Image (cartoon, rainbow, N blue to C red; front, side):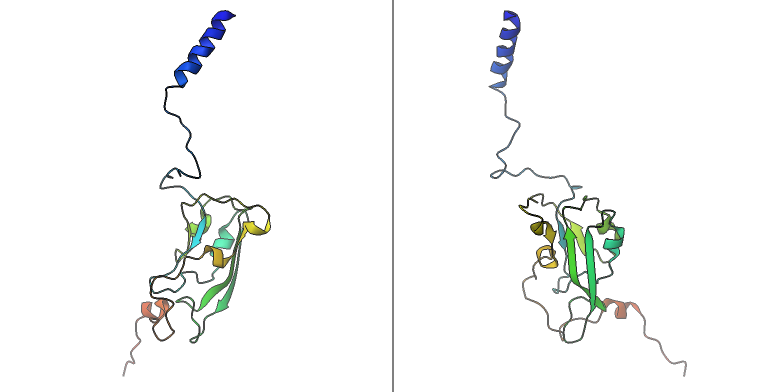
Length: 166
């Protein structure tokens, strides 16, 4: 019995001189791998327009039914995305999300991206519902473009001009 006690103290004494494995979390943040799927972000184009066109394919692909998208029509006076529609409401229930990345794969415009932010603590259920304002990245330097500054919709540029056979 005394030998086991001495072996235990020897193991403890050896561990005192080894490098600790833990990190002081709030002060030191560990890097994540390239394939890590963290907090969602809604991306913008360089000119400030939102990439999300309100198609709701991300909501259809979500196996946990965590995403809700409601689309509205763009107007010439008020344009939010280059397409005909934009997401007027975009919500993700983070209590339901399983971080599978299917929403990212389903998005045709690469608007929703799972970034590397892993700090997702909430104190109540209401704060676990991430709205569009919480998810969208800020407008780049230069501000929101006016409707006159916006380039033609990307769909219009993809269709060649039709000429009369005359």
